[in-house]
Amino acid sequence: MNQILSTSMPIDNKKKKSGQYYTPDDVALIMSEWLSKCEGENICDVACGTTSSILKFFGIAILIFGIFLAGTGVYAIYKNQSYQQEQNLEPTISIENKTENTVMLRITHKRNIAKVEYGWNDEEKTVVNGNNGKYLETEIKIPSGTNTLHVLVVDETGKEMTYEKQYEMESKINLEVTGNKIKITYDGDTKISYMTYRWDEEEETTVEINNTSIDKEIDAIKGLHTLTVVVVDENNNTDTKQQKINGVSKPKITMGIDEQQQHFVIQASDEEQLSKIRFVLNKDEENQSYFVNLEEQNLKEIQYVVPFELKQGENIIEVTVYNTNGVSEETGVVRFVK
Image 1: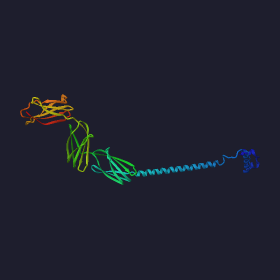
Image 2: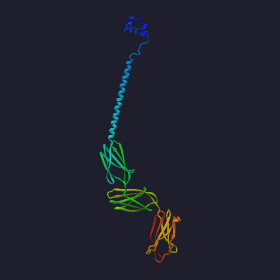
Image 3: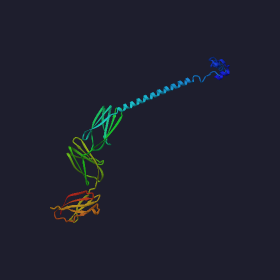
Image 4: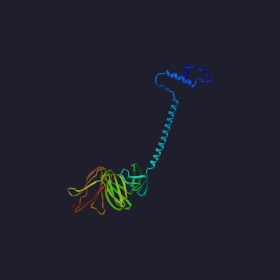
């Protein structure tokens, strides 16, 4: 601007000496002369008010940014408070031992309880209606052995919460394996109504007891299988025991007479291997037993003719056959009249 003024009008030396080159009137005069020479209708000074506009822009931007930061902080505080409130709305689940084989499940909630489901391991769950109350309790029986209790609580909004706890209770049921027989024993303080047993997933067998103890023998089945025994007392309390048992084969015996009717004939077989035959013929005062050793013959079946001739009148024989697993089978008393 000073350059324009310096070329458009004479310099006043007095003004230069006083440090004042041009007055506002001088500037206005020069600008009017310059603008009169410009073509077009609209003339704009692009620098006019620029600093002020920039300051206003940054001021507004800082204000908006401050509002955004404040809003974000308020939202974060609100969200954290909402989360804490939501956490405080979760149910309180407690399980306490009530008796030797039962626990008491207690649930309290600030919201209404819609329902509660509980069950042991992967078995079917029991459903308890919450009746939209804020407190619920129920008594649960503990099965014998090592088991995990699973609890599911559902509130009025459909929100779910799960809980689980493992329990270990020793069974009073005793299983003793002897050959292909299994002896089941149990001693309790309360009268036992009945017991059930089953192999693997087969149909269970029920045995009436009506006593405070059990002494029952059952047959094992060949191979490795799972035996489940359940004892139920008169108060409907249950005791369960599950055990894997490797069942072995049992010998088979058929008795006969030879064609001349002079000797007993023993026919024996086994899926594994026969080890020996024991028989008692026409019991005398000494009740003498005779043995036939078969272990070195590797036989699964045999037809053995008793070397003693039958006497006139009644003849009696009792036979027991053993296999290599120590399992035996008896014929009981067999009679033949000659």
